View 1 (cartoon, rainbow, N blue to C red):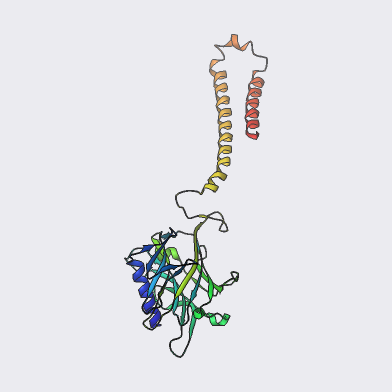
View 2 (view 1 turned 30 degrees about the vertical axis):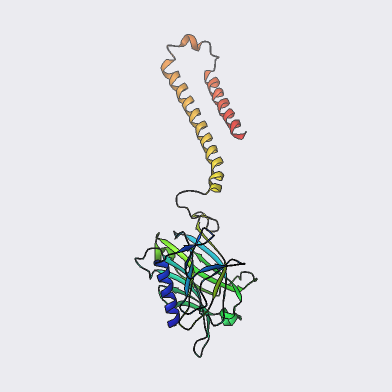
Length: 310
């Protein structure tokens, strides 16, 4: 437990006070001892030396709003006798570094008992939810490659973690989950996301990250099953293109009704105020002027309706 407390402490320091070096992918920063190795272009978070630590961090911070969904996947391996790694979501400002949420993949061979677990931490090294992955025949520091999925559902405020061996599909049931409200923790403030690892004084582990994908979406208010990009300032391009025909159709219908109404009012006013002065002109109109007028109005409406249909 003390080793992992030091691990989280080192990760927080690197997150808040980082002198980052950039690597080829434009969306990530390498911090501390993290570096790229060839030929598979994996990111090694640590050197095989004691007290080595490093972070692979998303360069642009995230902004959570209600209701948002976060989905992230990464593949990794931990060498023998390693301590594991941590997926960390941390407030971007240094004002309160304890405002973090972490998913720890914790493994240790120190002492009489072997630690091999996945846990969720919130502002503390003490896990609020934990699962022993030995129960599903997984050994984190075996040197094997693993798949990890971390999903947050803002509508239900649930954080779920899934873990499998490399090449296996994403399981339907999480290995561990916890009820949590990201918006309540961070509000609309920017949040950094990163994968971190740190060696203790007796550890020479090497932690490798082979791939990492992250998606943050804002759930539509109309239907929780459909999501749009987390852009509070407007619709996505696809939604905008879908809404344009409806907007045009509504405008045409509204314009047609307005034209018909104005025409009716003008004819009505003309009959009332100008009938006496225009008797000579009215004599040229057939015996049923009202029929003629209404017929013309109907034709105008039908024409516009045909235009709408076309």
